[in-house]
Length: 256
Image 1 (cartoon, rainbow, N blue to C red):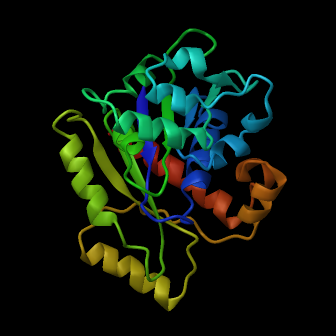
Image 2: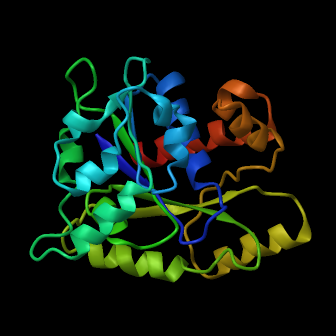
């Protein structure tokens, strides 16, 4: 089992799309079992998975923060080997409640390591879609994370918070020594002077980056409106092709 956190302190950079496509491709192309965890009170990942409208819907991530067993609150998607832990605005209340408690506050997500798919086996991958902040729910996620991936859209505010993320990962290593910042994933990439300069700046600053960049495509927004993974809605689009190459690069990097 590998636990992946998708994180950036800036919104609108493609975190949820990256989590969704990474999970979808790992499952459908590589046959891996995947549990998607929505750790954002906005619940975009949950909506993409259609879980807000399920009869048995609960805010699973809020329940995790309250100490519930993940196997009691996750939901299967109907596809064998694919599960989801949903979120909504009630996650905000649970976050505040946890902050007000004394004692242990950063071990609430440990139960994720015990998550089991329908066949009773551990999930191959758990992918956590985090909000654009460093709240106690994000700290809890990082405490169980193996691989951190930071999607970045190259604009004038793209680099805000990168050092904060690096510093927080360093602090988490005392309790979670296996956590690694795998790299920055450039999203919505256009081959223009500004984007080329942005990539060069990141490289000059010594940030580890994925070689593959997720190319801009209007099909991304369309797939969201249609409620389908990009890989299913428009597999030949530039962004879908980029995501497949990125997942291949990720798998190579974690198998070495």
